[in-house]
Image 1 (cartoon, one colour):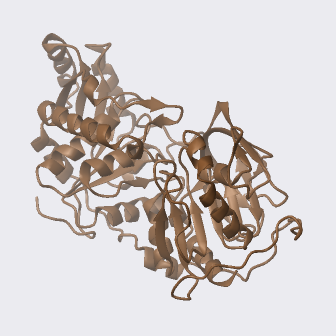
Image 2 (image 1 turned 90 degrees about the vertical axis):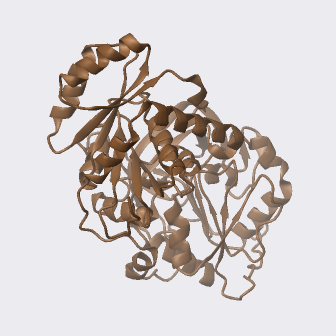
Length: 486
């Protein structure tokens, strides 16, 4: 294979399964690493809003793991975002989400792996957990092959096969359906990745063990799968007629941000309690240095966010709230994405100098965008431990998982969006913030239930809702503009 540019038919495969837990992540990550180990430039992708699997994909390929989400970004951006990530690569591997035909609840095929495979004109490899079946696998594969004729299932990988005899029975069954078996994997505990309340443990928290696990996945796939046949199937993908997404072009085509207006319904600050602080200035005097939280506690982010910020004119600087005691010099805007602050609550609380630095920036009126984990960090406390105290709210762990896509509209004018801006997002947390909304809420949820949520105070926009800025590049442009003018 020769290197492919963004305008060509990048060879590609979609790794799917009948259901969650079948072994998609093991196969996809192992295949990425095995192909990369043979000198290929591999582009890693994940269907849906998952932040954790792309970390393992990045480890396997040495490239940024990227998400393809037809709900958050719209079907029309799936191809362009794919080509953006796959630029200059020899082959792309796309890991699916849930079962092949599972998508956004009540929305038909929207955001399903099947829809993404069709949008990418990519063949699908079905990973089947064969641990508790033999001849019945034929009925299962036949059903998935015939359900939607527009989805091309080009092969099957049989996972968790118990023995040579089991393999023979399975191969005979799948052969009767006319679908090639492209791999057989035995049970292998060494490829298992530990999980907790929100899924797999991120790479950033266990890098040495993650490297070993990815190497084991690569060895298992290389030994059990026909890599040449998989690569040949990838080359059969149809050409895409769309152009690659470009952050600069997206920002340039977005509408200019409106002039700042007061937050709707926001109570005026009491200067006796929360005096305004002087605004910090970036060293170059442009006032556009945006600090982005990273490190093990804040691993949930989309690569396109920082690309859009940079395209909008920001100097993006990453910092680790677990280690750094001050925000980067000259910070005039702050982005705190998702992650696991509940796991690191004591360490985050112990870093009092940084908590004070964050609070001072927020009280100065500087733009601060906080999603989920960032929301918790800005609260007064998390599980009884002091946090930044920017918001008069407390957060705690909960037994209830909040999970799902959301259709939202901005309730209050903020550094991210003007009131009335409509965005789709995703919630994924086992925590509760009380109260759940401030005097000026961030979002009004239109679906699946109507409610208000989040906080808009001064320049702060804090919410549980994860959004993908590629769907609305004006968010980044507006945020950077506010860094300069607020």
